[in-house]
Image 1 (cartoon, rainbow, N blue to C red):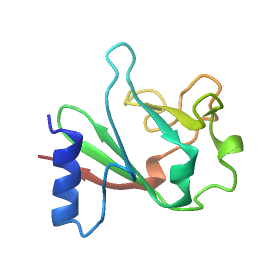
Image 2 (cartoon, rainbow, N blue to C red):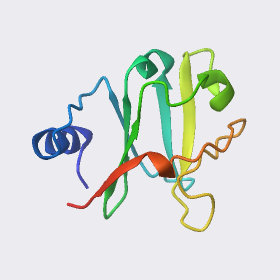
Image 3 (cartoon, rainbow, N blue to C red):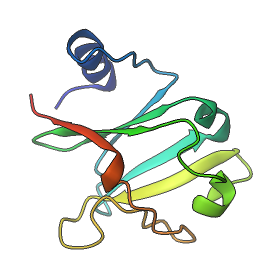
Length: 120
């Protein structure tokens, strides 16, 4: 399984995209629940946000373009204590795959924002 840095370096070198640790969040599948879990600071959504969803066989690269939703607070659960969008994206192929399943979330579907499945 590749690290966040290895995946960012690969995408930057081969896909003509500029990813770095500031505009990219990374998650492996949670051990206790089949989700990719993220806390992404709301300030990061002033530009494009990249999510790297890593599993055993591939990395799903999601790009959320600047302004992709009108209001973060109405589209996602936002943790006021961290000023961060709190996401649990389903990794379960049989249940709401690639949708936000966070308790208190809105069920946002990320499937339309998949930029590429990357296999190493």
